Image (cartoon, rainbow, N blue to C red; front, side, top):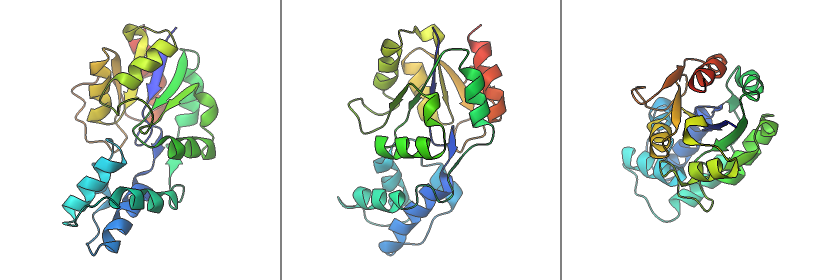
Length: 213
């Protein structure tokens, strides 16, 4: 049995603009100037609290205990304004089902994750979904990935983590699994830690397949 574990933002879905708009709305509420979408995109990956801290710090806006809850409210109202699955993702997931079980491991809150997967017609591909606000420590801690491996009874050599960021690469390394870099995403990764590279979603089945041979 093989297990293919996907990151969400920047790997399955292009959510950069909605995340950036929510962060900039928070910054504007607190008197700051907006940040470029690309800059905020590079801040994504460690969860909402880290994104808010990085964005407010970059905008020279004070951070307080209301910052993260307010960001989540602002983001919830923008969740699906522009966010879409990357072109070719449904077809790639369909092709990958022959290789084994598909799951999602993200630092995004579970409620937002499940709402996005359902709205974008991706939920049916995944047997398990772990968000960043559940019982497991967030990536790059390997706890969530190790749980998925135990749940699906797979070994590290038969487990592939697919993601776009250094967080995903570090998670795979910590769990001794293979890593496939989603190069088309918006994570700031140079690919040095990738065992395989997908330049576009259509490349994922072949890239993952090569790691499972």
